[in-house]
Length: 272
Image (cartoon, rainbow, N blue to C red; front, top):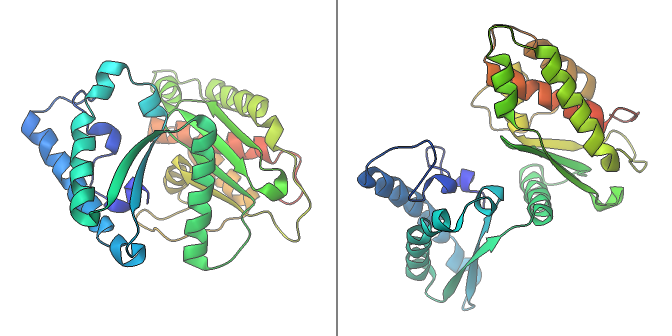
């Protein structure tokens, strides 16, 4: 279960530690946000016993790059969160344990692919998934299916830099565009080979790619259903929207990074 599925208004897990960068608030406010998170977590756990039967349960919390980058002192700030989750798990499941799993970049990519594939089958019930594209604020990931050799690629290309470039009095749009194009082309080389498939390649783009699609008008805000777009029209829509000088700088930076990723991934592909 993705944390994002627990509730639209919940704080991300990474913002529930004692020292959250960029956030100054009284302890009571932090504890309130933690409490809301735990309540939502408990509501999902309540669905587990019927499926579990008499067996033991193991709840795994997979932590991404944000946790890997924390110093030892900042990690200690999450001890109270883990204690609350353990208490919640024991109340709901009785025979259960909590494992805190620090994911490697490769594991993170594979779990992302598996989660998207599961969600796709739960939603549409069938269909081939050739590739998953995921982007966060700092990095981009490409994970391909075993039919395409299961290749994975992860590289840094942070939106903060693009936003800073586009917020200046004389924004260097073409400079950010070149940086994105060069970075994507240099890292996605191992992912550009595709095996033959019948019909079109099926690629699902999530997280910041979804945000870029909303900013470009490819998806209406608030619409959580799957959206399908032709490659060429999607790239052109992103490109035109990104060039609007009146757009929000971070959205523009994200749209540029998104179409640069797509173009690098499919620059020689007839199926796109």
